[in-house]
Image (cartoon, rainbow, N blue to C red; front, side):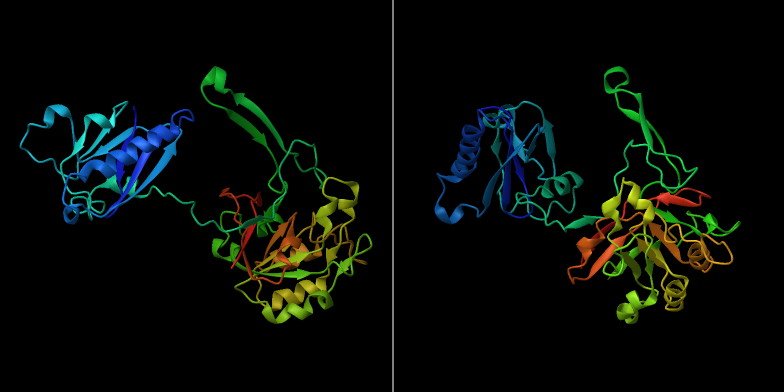
Length: 350
């Protein structure tokens, strides 16, 4: 029986690791467990240490033997320190025997030895995972750009695994490609850049407002009346996310006919101290033009001019409308001096 690893965890729990070979998994497991269980079969029951034993299979695991001695060491009277960890390749457990109590000799040694800490991290059960909801559009080579003059996303290989030993790609994209964050310098010369923003404002609780019901037509307007019912929850510690449902048109001509936030609503949001506003359309201003002035980015200027960050091109915001409390992460790349950045926006239930 080859390549079986008897590794000790904290206290008296034992993990037996076997390389993953479907043809020999069962025999390896039986051999490994019987080796451990029969180690003290000839001792009085009161002297048998108490332990639990488990089996873990790995695709390819170098054999670690803790506190065991080889055949030629059996005659030695020197006791091996339990903190010693021998890294051995392709060695059979038959050649080794234990020279110390399984429960007492290895107790509390992991705090003293880094290699034991690594082994003690081996878990037999799956770790607890939080459900993370992706709020970002995937970047793909579609030639898609919803704003005139903005670069489209491209990706091309420059190194290959076969030729160069690794795969490496060259990316081309704009600072406002896909799901992205606008920094104040986007519209104000000399203002804060993406590397200047306060990251704490981009990770934390979110207030998600459903504004879909009044946006059945193209080029609709989001008013304060659509948000007022949640106005009491708005403050400097939350990110406001507006769900228009418009991400369903991503990649289609209709996406450019999106709704926009009114200046009045933006002013009310600003008065409540909100520091981040996110929306699932290409621009929080849409293609709206302010009558009389011809201004096309009035809301951008109002919010960014007062230090409120804007996230655009969100998607899947509808998943956050189940009445649960959510936190979000809207972190940008650390692009020194840049006016914006693509982000991987995610949310999780709290």
